[in-house]
Each structure stands twice: as structure tokens, then as C-alpha cells.
Length: 382
Image 1 (cartoon, helix red, strand yellow):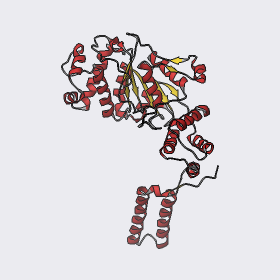
Image 2 (cartoon, helix red, strand yellow; image 1 turned 135 degrees about the vertical axis):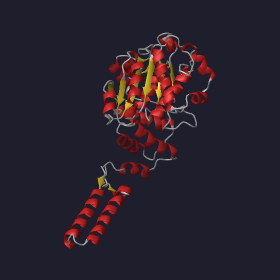
Image 3 (cartoon, one colour; image 1 turned 30 degrees about the vertical axis):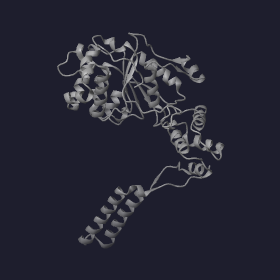
Image 4 (cartoon, helix red, strand yellow; image 1 turned 90 degrees about the vertical axis):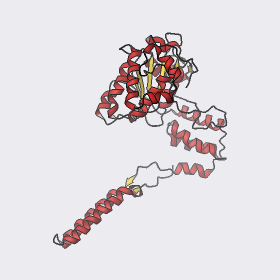
């Protein structure tokens, strides 16, 4: 929860949600810089891609469905978290390069009554039961969940009276909760689209084809902001995603990656035997991916001293693609069986059956223990 705005008292008008900017949903746990329990992995700092955040906010204000696309760990989730913070009232200062691209100094959203937005954040769009539960719980927190036998003008009071555990007893099945979510959206939007409701669906590529109808219902009633790593294989989901505008999230530039490294070194007192060598290898391995950089810096922060051996371990990690020896093994078994059959003829039925079984069992061994057949050549020193 990024906002401590008071709970809504009524939803009789579609714009009642926008009485004050707020974000609801289970966001990723973040630490407080300087606190004992804050680590490199939970530190809320976000550097780079400020122009992407500015474009995302602009599209959200215009009510345009938008997808963030990029590799895993490139920073899509942190951009969605930043969007949630902006909706809740935070004003984000952009760096110089982002200011030039976004043509502004700050990123912010309206906060006055009647103009503010409400954001519902869902960490994973699949499976369907998890998505439905997350939306139903968020709508319950906002006081707009359609409960059985409760008229729209009394839902806020009913949601205050019943906690989430009691609501789950009233709406026992996933289908019942999904129906309640759809009814809530329909009543809130008045048959159209709620103008100031943003539904953020992270990891949208984990949705299944069976969720298509429910996702389209959400899309018709609210502005949907999502994040995916790549286009899904399902044709129905591809058709659904084709209705979104797309923003590609690129890896961080050298300046931002270096600044992130220096921040973690100073904030978490990472001691290095050779700081220059450690910095060079971390930046080389991260390749602008902040999640990879955080993982490597977390290992360094947990140890008392990053030694030369630790840096060499980073350097020796394999970047070369795997070579699958399993296929060689399988074809060898097939060839051996065929050769034996040709040598003895096909009249010896018992031996033919034995060789066939050996070939099949050999293939099953490969399928079960295929990891053992993955060979990786050692890269040259760089």
C-alpha cells in the first residue's frame, strides 16, 4: 500500500473513486534504505528509464491500455511500482537525459478531488484464481466489491463491516468472486469504462488462454497497464495483447548502471580488495540489467570482503551457449540398435525386442537425467 488515504465512503458516482489518489494491491516488499533489514535486493532505488515512466503516466492519464515489454529483470516491475507511487501522490524528479526526452522535469498525476486516479496492482496475472482473488481483495479494500444482496450504495459499509476472511465465506468459489469483480466493474463504470481506475497486471504473459474473456471484461471497464517479457504463444492472448500500445523497456545505459553500482557500494559498505576490477566485472556481467546487478552486489554485500577469487569467479562464469550432448547419445542408441538388427537379421525376434527395449530405456534415461548431458565449453579469459 503506497498511500494512507482514507477509505471511501460511497461509490454512487463513477468519479467517487478519484476522491484522492491511492494504490491498492500487494506490492513487492521493499526495504527502507539504512534500516538493518534492508538489503541490496529490497532497496527501493530505481535509476534510469525515467522517460519510460513519463510516457507510461501520460498514457494512463489518457486512458490508453499499455504494455511494458522487456527482458526479465530489466526493470518493468519497478516502473509499475513507480507508477503506483505517482498515482498515490509522489512527484518523481527525472534526471537530465530523461528530462530532455520527456520534455519535463517532474512526473506527477492530478490529486485534486474528482481528478485523482485509483490504481489496483496485481503482482501476477495468472493463474486465474490468483488474479480473481487479488482483484476481489483490492475491490473489497476500496469498498466497491459487489457482495450478495447488497445494493451498490451500501457496498462501502458492507465492505467495512466484513473483513476479507468473512467475504471469502460469502463468495466461496473462484467463479463467484469473478462474478462479483465483473459486477463491481460494471456498476462502477455505469456500463462504460471507469475513467479514473487503473488496473495494473504484472507478469501478464503468465495468463492462460482460458482467462481471455475475463481479461477483456476488465479491459472494457478500466484502463489496463501490463508487463510482459515476450508475446505469448496462445493466439487468443496475442489477439488480446494486440489491442495494447507497447513501450519497450531497454537495459540501463552505462552511466546509470555505474551509478547503481556506486550507490550499492557506498550504501551497504561493500569492501573490495580491488574495487576497480570488481566494478568492471559486475558491470560487464550485468549488461545493463538491474536485477542481475542487484543479485551480484547482494552476494558481495553479504560477505565481509570481496576478494580477488570472488571477482575471478564472476569472470569465469560461462557466457557460452549450452551444447546438448543428449541428442548425440540418443542417435547413438538408435544407430547401435539398427546396426545390431542389420547384423543379425530380423528373424531373431527375441534379440530384436531386447535391443528395442534397451533403446527405449536409454532414451528415457536421457529424458529424466537430461541436465547431466548438457555440456558447456569453458570461455576464454577476458
